[in-house]
Image 1 (cartoon, rainbow, N blue to C red):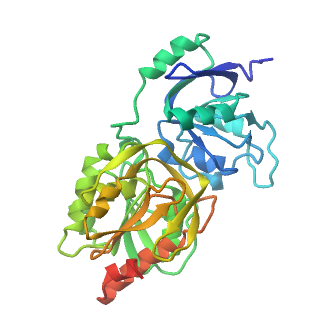
Image 2 (cartoon, one colour; image 1 turned 90 degrees about the vertical axis):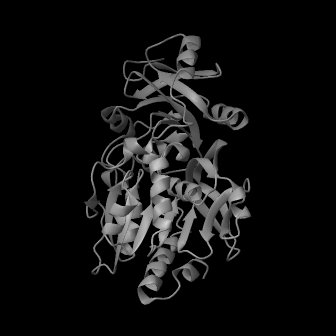
Image 3 (cartoon, rainbow, N blue to C red; image 1 turned 60 degrees about the vertical axis):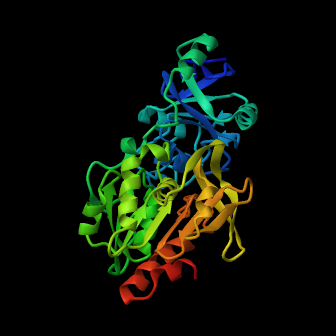
Length: 386
């Protein structure tokens, strides 16, 4: 039985498939690319990750909201998802860290959600047919009409969503969540294509003073700040739509005094394009906290947090100057690469994780080692392959 607090809601996909459930969060309608995340916890980090801009996220774990929400777990200033889909929404939070309930949090943030649908069936459908556009509505009753509106909504292919989530102006990190530490040893400029707070925390803990710049910042402006290293962040959308970022990365690579470059997620894809490679859209993407990745330099398998719908094409490694460093063990997609001479490396997954796993935190230490090597006159590229 529906109530004013939990009205009837419909999720309709562009192929005509639809699910009827109950709404939560804001009442109304929302469109986006429907994807799924396999993490067992960390729903607040998922909701506030800017890499999910423009997407309706389905959680495969059935009970969501059990431990509520709190300010400390947010990865940006507000929820970024276009919509949220769960099997069952918890209406009572049970955690000493909780400062509120998920339903009210999403209502205040203006996020439309749907619950009490078969999320297992939806996930199986997306796995077989691929991620597709969809719409959640608590207002319309005709699934066919909703599916048609989903087909007319924005496609993720060709969408430059990084411009929608980047900061408006450069700033020095020192806000919420910044740890207390000794005087920083290195200066890092971090491109904000949708940067997560935990990236900034880990860079700071590694001894870096971080200046965050908008995604459209040119290479000359970055180099004028005389950083020890440059970081390219995660972010949403199609990397090929970020031509301005690809040009800046290429110019940084070709600078007379190139600085160590480290990219993750969208930053990984942008560096892949800057190196002359290609990217392509995955069928349903990688999203969750349980993806196995083999580090080809050490042979170790890392369990990683991931959130991406595009990947770097392996044809990049037809060029002898590039090395494949990390491989996804589920589907053999590219998870990391490095330049054999320049101090440049990138990974597709999220080493900052938050809430976990933390297997890949070592990459921030490698970035610091590259900056230390450049400062001391050693080969910074050698640190990438150490």
